[in-house]
Amino acid sequence: MFKQLTAFSIIGLSVLGLAGMAATTPELGRKLTDTDLDSLDVAILPDGQGLPQGQGTAAEGKPVYAVHCASCHGVEGMDGLHDRLAGGVGSISSSRPVKTLGSYWPYATTVFDYVRRAMPFHFPGSLSDDEVYAVTAYLLFLNGIVDESRVLSQTSLPEVKMPNQGNFFWRSFEAEARP
Amino acid sequence: MSGQHTDSIDAAGNGLLHRRFFLKTGALAATALMTAQSSARDRPAWMNAPGKGMSAAGEPSQYEKHVKRLAASRPGTTGSGASRSPLEHLEGIITPSRLHFERHHSGIPEIDPGQHRLALFGEVARPLSFSAEDLCRYPLVSNIQFLECSGNSGAMIAPSPVENSCSILHGLVSGSEWSGVPLALLLDEAGIKASGKWIIASGADSARMSRSIPLSKIYDDAIIALYQNGERLRPGNGYPMRLFLPGWEGNASVKWLKTLQVTDQPAMTKDETSKYSDLGETGKAELFTFDMGVKSLITSPSPGLDLDRQGLYQISGIAWSGAGRIKKVEVSTDGGSSWADAHLDAQPLPKSLTRFRAAWRWQGGQSVLLSRATDEVGQVQPTRAQVMKGRAPGSFYHYNGIQAWQVQTDGKLRNVYV
Image: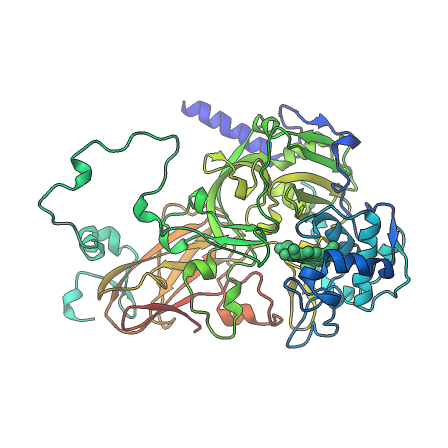
């Protein structure tokens, strides 16, 4: 009994400790095909990878926002029941920081990604990609980052530079990435 | 203090006794802690007839109904919010699954495991998909570990102390035995390309909660958890599968895990930029502050568990660290003028709650109870002032300061800053 236990724990250790070596597993993973993924499964990265086709402007986004978002986030992204989305620029290093897309968020792609995956709160995924580009443009317009007629798309959205981007940092994890 | 207590060994000021006191003098301790005993001459009703029959699943006693989670959602939503573990009513280091804290961003999905698949793709040689049943056939590992929301104890940044219970203030931490598949095994099966550096995990809730995790953590100790405390995960904790990253902020352990995309860069999702980032007073903000610091907390006595008479009490609490094992917990009952080592239950486990205890004779005076943990890498739990240093106002994540409970002369306890 004792011997068996020891042998088992040695196998357990080697599975974990020597992850670089081919461990013995049942290898039950099935080949993933494109149809296994839905349109929201692929992450949108700050450099624009993963962004879908489509486009929109703030002018087009204004009515989308009024219908689908204003009830919770307030007229022009302020004074709503839920997160404030606009204003607060310059407040982040003050004694009363107000975090909004304009004052805080480092990447414009995050706005598109988050709204597309999770908003409007009760009906996520209900907006078309064009509507998401448009409402993203409107939110950036409310924050003075793009003008009303700027067309946001797969190529132009990642080019939008968010004003507070330079104030973020993180430690590197890459050196230890591999076993 | 006076000669009548020569049987005890004072370990620090204000009646704090040696950590082995209870072990040495069990009988004495028992009498002091015991609540009133029934002295009825008649047998109680439950002894006069057979009790209830068996049941498919157990329930706590009807007399324990007050031991429950405290749940609150954002207005207008049912599922954006949190429920907190009733820490002051719990003992040991395992939180019953039904009382484990939860933090959801858009409610709890009711997932049919037959339809749920985990997709592993991106910078891999062989994109794969797995069902929960598939994963149950892999070699599983089980570990007793804590999970803590990085927003836990956030109320402690308030300029003046919030009067509330231990669970309202600190109940976003729990401990469980988590069993699952080491994620490294699945990555090896898929074959990571040299370009792969991060993994983007997202859930099958309607918020598709998503976080970017550096591969180093995956190869260190990440698992896909399938079981919690011996049973399959409960829906509120990610059924049928969740990512579990020992020692890291709870939000990164994505529940209802649906996709794992290997990438060369982090995705900068809303919940790792707008939220769960740490803003400093200079306006600089740090991203990916995953590690949960060394922390401890006296759970009893604490506000609501007031002292009803002078005498001997057991101070009981939990300590934990995202960096490994708890090495030592010190307790003070005089606001930090003097400290004594607490007794640690069993052998502290890495990245797990550790239960600590101390014996204390309350002499009726105003007292301030503190605990201070040290972990195996030498981190010492900071004071509130140390934690607050350099933070921007309102920056509440990763609060691990020393908690102070003041005992008033009437025996009531409250949250204070020292």
